Length: 342
Image 1: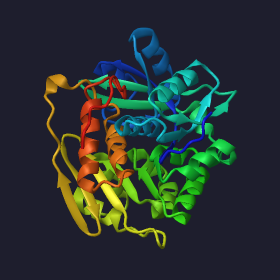
Image 2 (image 1 turned 90 degrees about the vertical axis):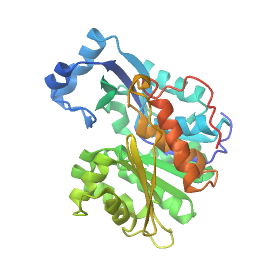
Image 3 (image 1 turned 180 degrees about the horizontal axis):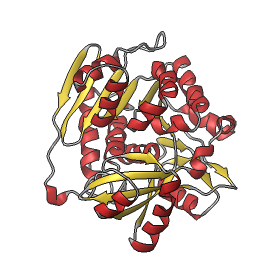
């Protein structure tokens, strides 16, 4: 394997999406709400078998962080600029994930668990909206010791930007904090995503431990609302963004930028006491396939410009481009060469 000399590293939960168009009765049967992301409980286990047997699903490489890194790599148009770490099983699903990411130009350095299958995510699509039910399986078994491998050290040293979705807070906070400490000590950039309301509600301590290191924080309107409610910041999304941007940071780490997307509504960016709104280009309803991966794609597009030193306007523009592309595909599938020009 050649030496990694890229600029962007992601660490998270690699998952194979099992995606299918479903009706409301299936959502009701498993008590799943549209536009939500949850961890599978015991009651959800039959859902995965039912999807495979009755719905002719599509299998798509997924996992929030891995999606964002793949999109960033696609937008950067030069192979080997990105790397990703996470834990998979030793099975066909893992090979499928690795082949997909590698073909997209991403260096994957997976930890492999021989005893547990690769994680899966049931992506339930109805009317273009999506609900995600995740079986973490092997993804839940990532260990900090993996960061001591020679290849992991090489990736961490080379990268100048790090992105970890909030979902990883349920897996290995120790690993996340090791990366944040490296970023802080070496004046590099650390980015995180709120990822889902349940993380804010039930993994608040873990999120609070990471927040002082966060240079760029991403989230959508429902996650922003959940954070505002939990921390008594009010209900106005702009005010919440400003207050989150102003939360304490580690000494010497500069300002925090908060970026909240709102679907087809304007994207909100808060930094240094100022809020900027960026309009989203509308998409004709008949071109919408599904919204699964839209937020991940936005982050990927944004990061592709951030690592190049571009300004905020350019970062958001690229994020909007990537999200608009992905919602016209089924899941995060990069079907052609990127034709984006800044």
